[in-house]
Length: 228
Image (cartoon, rainbow, N blue to C red; front, top):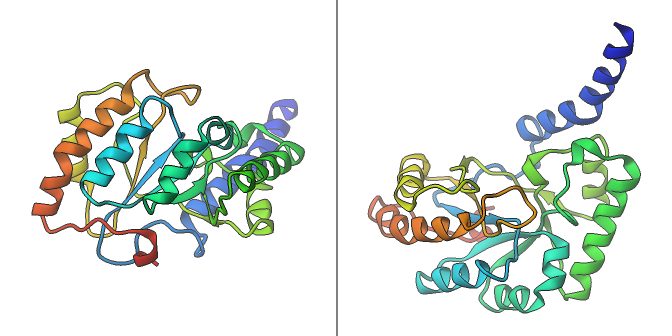
């Protein structure tokens, strides 16, 4: 029995407890907008198929968002990173290659942050925000966040848009779940990150339907600068 309890205890201390603590008790983490408004955020990109279409939609509605990018994807598509910056969006870090922090050591976690930030620096991007894949952290994640002066940004609305679901269903979830201090976590990539192929197209379509209705409800889309 002890041979089962020991690795389980190590996993709980290394992975489960840090994730739970930073989600629920870290007063420095951004978990809502802290004032009236909706903040759109997108994880896992940039993506050569979907991100351009998403930027077109945001530009059409004059909405600013936060893109939490996977550094290796950013390196592949620097023109999309440049467009995000040129159009006034914020760029945050979403890891080097979208691996689960629960399964990695101090040394991989160190490499993850350092190589990610090296790539972003090469792209002339200074990241101030960090969102771990799946929201999972390990015992060392927060140490490297502080070392690199990154602030944890989570979410309070998620509609499972990584699954290939209809635009109307996703729209209804957005309308139902969004409130006056929502941080919405959506996704603009379906490659190598566990999402269904083509799912971001439904996300974009759902946003096109939902944005006017959310505005009718009196909800405003705000940028990070107005959410602190």
